[in-house]
Figure 1 (cartoon, rainbow, N blue to C red):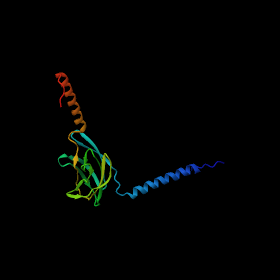
Figure 2: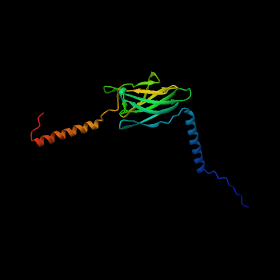
Figure 3: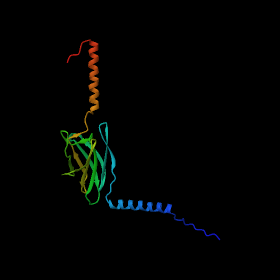
Figure 4: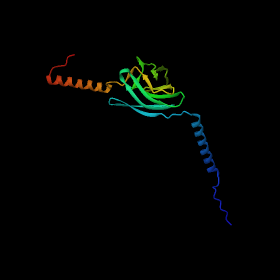
Length: 184
């Protein structure tokens, strides 16, 4: 007589695989539960004139609605919608070619205005291409302004370089046509 056993047999090979799966599930659950306000950074495309910049940002107590450039005041304006009653945190990566804060060649702090109140923004990391800020955001806030010392160059340096080259070619060609030596 045959006994049919439909349950799979646990062997050392699939037992260790099962333990690994359970361990990974447990670690994932612990990580998710230990971060109640976990916010995933979203990539926002900020446009100014014909230029686009990728700005990664996350807000733990709400949503980022838009990010705009105010070149007259060297400011980035972030429209937000907060929820709940908790104080949240905005983390934002600011590309240096979009906005920067410098005195000479040294970095200085950005001026940060949350609602109508100037606050301290904490610089988390910085590199040659970006600066990451962490800013506390109370509930009920609608806008955050980050003020720097320079913002989107009006004329990119590559255009200025090309103009200089074209001018040089023009001067050389003119002197060849007129057959008059260049004098400086």
